[in-house]
Image 1 (cartoon, rainbow, N blue to C red):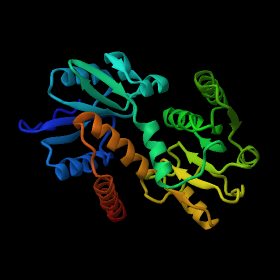
Image 2: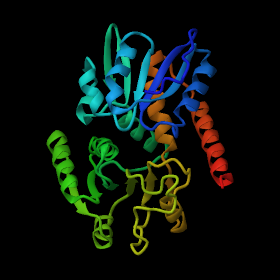
Image 3: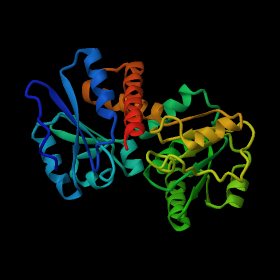
Image 4: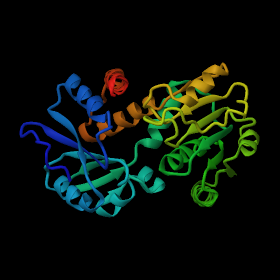
Length: 298
């Protein structure tokens, strides 16, 4: 665990636990929201290796931290260290937010609700319709659950067909919704994408520094009217979103979901609603600075 970060004695600290964590823009986003509301809170990103996770949760129990976010690679491993889970965290089998209820530590997952909130923000008409989802990891699981809650047929495309089949089976058993597991080839993508109103990238393809990668094979045409949603938010406009725009389609990166899920976690810790506008502006500014630094790097 990183011991080099000094914790303020005056402020209540929210910790972001993950490894590695230096890339996160969550501290900028949350600290801007705390300041706007005049709250005596600070948000710190703390590198926590896998073997240090129990000690980190002990620090949370001791009151050194008032709450936490949890990110890769700890979203599943942290569950056994907590006292209870919300319905969302239990359903997804993953925790991204920890808050207090008396002397208990409760694990929550705000990814599902954050994703749905940003779809609504973008006025995407997806309910009851086929949707394409790239990936078979934790993000794909949350997205698929969210879509199935709204009557969608989910078509999963993953590089590992066996993992995809397992995820599809898990989701179907939990929700009873329709999940189609599809191989990730140009032919399968072309067939699976037909009739889909929305495609969601839940893989790291296109994320900085690998900005020229995309989950969409260039030889496969985009269906007319499809909305492209990329969970990757760095860079703000990914190769996939560029592809969508070049085909006259609407598309967006994942910054909106980051803000929405962060705002829900913020409410868990403070009991107050933060300004989405302030959080998004702070996050976008941080991304811009990092992008400029990357361009200037030798």
